[in-house]
Length: 446
Image (cartoon, rainbow, N blue to C red):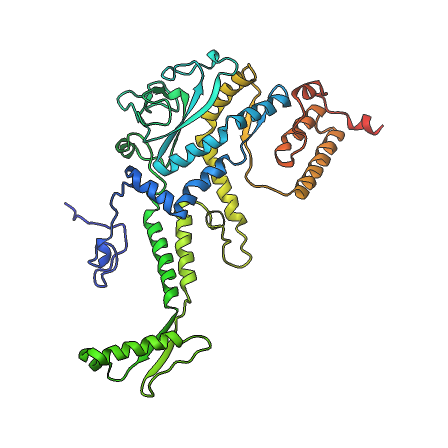
């Protein structure tokens, strides 16, 4: 029988007490549940009183809804304009912004589609929606509804295993005591949790502030501590001979000392004099603040790392370093925002846009309909014009050389409108009527 050998998966030096489990103070380090997401009042106090918490909650929500979407494949450009106007009139993007905010703050929130004349407890059937029935959306955070944990969705799909209904509480802003079917809501979670943890949160996620709390308290403590040091930036000391004896005796001698000190404070100014006994000593001391800015910057970077929001967006502060502009950080951040938009909003938005189309246009979205989330990365008008000119020349040259047909050229020009801002009104009819065969380069040259 062979000898048993025990191995560890970390470095340890028991003689130097280095490494976890080697007998040092580090052995007492560990992680415990925070469960801040269950403390609604504390989260609300933090959101109202801390500008950092406000930024963490609001910035991502603002960026996810700031530019809206680009719609393509509709029957006409007028349809797109009409749909966008209806989205603006019903304040859809503002309501979605609220939904994202409260999902980040509380760990979950719902946006309920309000369809006039329909029972919210029944499954949504878009075929029953008539003209002008859609009235907007109602935002309900996780504390305004009670999910039916005993009645879950059993149909296969993205909602499988989620609550089938949400019972609205009496004190809600609307739909009080109503039961809402899951197909009528856009549900967003804060930070998604593993299965057993989500069960402890009634199948909701957790607040984005929960992971941030320890970093946030350190940052605020350092900031307030640095602010307190300002009061001690200019210290003055006054040495009095036999002060201990004067204090011990008290009486008129001690009162005379206090009177002297008050007289010094009264007449001491930029133009005044400091009167004192020849045996007394008056000194001033300057305090140095060197190193505090680097310390605060490091704490700020930890908050930025914990939230996934770059410093330039979270604090409005450009990163330090040679030739640092923050553009690469913003680019990565915008990519992350787009990933969240695609993963959390595309499917429910597709359903809602179908409802808006039926209510506004009186018809379903065509099979060719597509939408993309508008890019957050904005370029100035001069660069747009240069890009548009370059794209136009490239597409025109490809068509004239016979590499692509006129129909393909029109499609490419309309596709480029997302960046250039022009050619967006090329209709499907114009594309369908265009020649689908590329011209012969030989016949063109002749």
